[in-house]
Length: 197
Image (cartoon, rainbow, N blue to C red):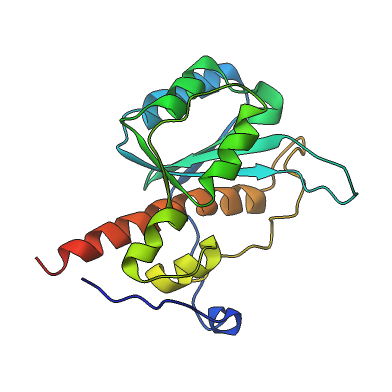
């Protein structure tokens, strides 16, 4: 089994080359587009998963999840939930046990989704719950990507407005990368088990 570092210092992240999602990014703005997206995503065994919420800068201010990202290895779909809610097809995918959805701090994301629609989440795997099996103590996406993929994930767009009328190309790439990289970390961890067979 491949050995991974247990920790990594923040300053060590800067020396790593950055990675971004290399595939096709599709922004889903309405329920018809959601149907097409889910049709594709439902055929995948493994998806990266993440959400984005408009940042709150004032005490007591809270926003609902604005964006849900699901990514295969080649295509990332960004569902604009603040505009379309969670359509039936997407709810079914969130409840599917057959399609694995890999994320970080999944419980928080699901709690946020429950504010938009009551779903019975199925098939979710939280990297934070499995990395300790590989001797890794870090919990953030950025540090997990550094340890497992030896690459740096940018966090520069995290505090941008995810409810903008149009998402910028930079926002789209950031959002797609965040979901996709969770999938990549999982695949690398699983394959590291096989390396000594």
